[in-house]
Image 1 (cartoon, rainbow, N blue to C red):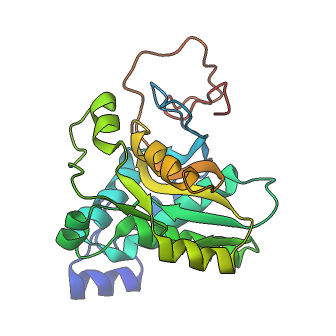
Image 2 (cartoon, rainbow, N blue to C red; image 1 turned 90 degrees about the horizontal axis):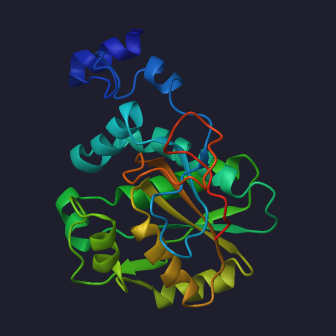
Length: 251
């Protein structure tokens, strides 16, 4: 533990969310061990029409601890390492793509934002865009989507129930669309979220954007849960992680 960690522990009583070492919210060792090989992360079953979803890693271990600490405990310092993971997924998803790219965070329910006092997905998406621009990428982040009233908490819902709960639940913000048209014409769009589970949320966000004529090229997430359904014999794994296997289709 270096002196900065010692001071943090003394003044704030901080501990790493990954290993509980005293000091900063994410110690150097846990940060160095974060995923660095983003890959396609198709859920099972795949929502019809879903564009390729990319994830920086699987939703377990330190990535899971980071997401929960930012979202539920408001450890705001963790937004930056999470943005680094999301930026990896976006970079992989848009590799070789010419022209401007707009990152669109999945909207949080208003009740969740009020209860938490912040919108973690929007924050992480904005920081990811900033990080990618610093590397020379033509990337911006816009909060184009809003969640309509009546959407239930997704916790504990299966794939079918999530899809039914989310059907028609998102819409584009007219003022944001007009601002986007002026500033970033002819852009392609990437739906961004913290965790990919069944893909229902990402698919609904994709639908809402495509309904106003926007071209969605990918979904990018910090992490993806492991498959809950039986393996699809038509899918051929290119990685040892079962949540990051490529799907043979492109839609």
